[in-house]
Structure formats: structure tokens, C-alpha cells
Length: 134
Length: 120
Image 1: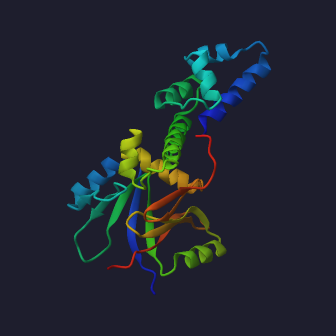
Image 2: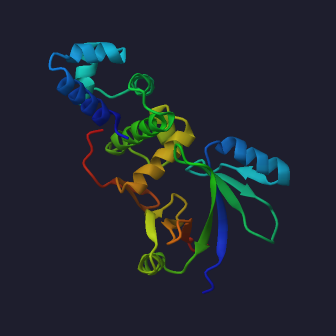
Image 3: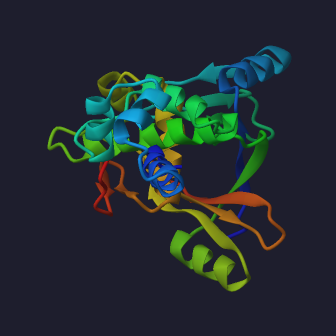
């Protein structure tokens, strides 16, 4: 689950139900401020793990969906890192750089491989295969 | 080439707990000295095969996968898909040089095929 897409879809749905429903009101309902939400929806700001969980609860997502959104968040963090020239194909290095637990890194790596977003093409080369807005 | 089963893998939502349980129960050696931090469980016996523990995807109940060594991974994947298997994780070369892919057989059971790096 891509929480940014979920947020956008939810906001659109609320706007359809009530044309006067504003981004400011949506931010209030999510427990954040208007500026932060605006930046998140436009991809100018990266969701933090805390916000992923907070928004998931406020949107009444299931525990499984929140866990899935968290893993997607971790996967996005790896993709951002993989774009760097200094990237190392090493879970321990990724965990250190992202601050994620090693298991979260490995679970997210499996997800990226499954989604064909990352390819482990050789022992020392992992490449991104799609343009992501992570 | 007999295509032997060379490894088992537990996918667990509690990988630390699972690895610790089997380590204690069977007095296996637990090693994470690899680039992925993969929990390898080694029996130290010439009989049987070793295995490891990997974190399960969110919301997925734990399960076990078997790894079958094949001489040509690409050929095996093509043959498997021709027989109705689906690819879950395409061919991937791990940091230690071994290559693997995870497939779903036509009955819905996942398994892995691997081509081990030649021993030097």
C-alpha cells in the first residue's frame, strides 16, 4: 500500500462528499498541520514512520494495511538510497543509513524484488528498474 | 544433475524468536555473519541440510520454503513457468554470489531454486 496514494484518494473522496472540505480540515482530521500534509501529498516531503502509523490509524486502516504501508515506506527509503552513487548492496549498510531495523530492510528488499522495482543483478550490483516518486 | 534440496528457510513474522527457538531446541549454531544479516541455522552435521530464517511479509503467517539447487537457474525458471509456476521473486544474485529465485507452484506452494556460486 502506498499511503500517499491512499491519502490522496481519501481526500478526493471526502471532497466529493463535501465540496467545502478543505486540505486544512483533512490535515486536522489526520492530526497534522496543513503545510506538512500539503508537502506530503505533493511528494515534497517524505513520510516518517510515525506519520505512516498515525495516518493509518486516523484513516481506520487495518493493522495489516498499516504494516503494509510501513513496509512500502521502508522500500521507498531503500529506493532513495539506491539512487546514490555511494549506495552499497548490503543490508547492514542500508540499515545503518536509514535507521531501519535489519529485518525491516530485508523484508522491504524482498518486496522490491517481488515488485520488480529492484534487481540484484550481481553480487555487488543492485539496480532500480522503475522511476519511483519515493 | 539430481537437483537436490539444499536448504530450508523459515519465513517468520518473529524471526528472532523463531531462530532462537530452533537454535535452543536443537543446539544449532546461529550465524548472521553475512551481508544480509541472514540468520543461518547450522546443525554442524554431515547429514541433512542447513537452513535459515527470513522476515515474513506483513500480515503473512509464517511458513517454510525449500531451496532446490539447479545447474541452470534461467532454464529451471523457464521450465517451471512452462509447467504453470509463477515467479514471486525473479532471479537475484545474493551478495555471497549465490543466485536464487522464488516461485509459486501450480498448487500455491512457494519454493526457491538456486544456483550456488562455484566453490573456489
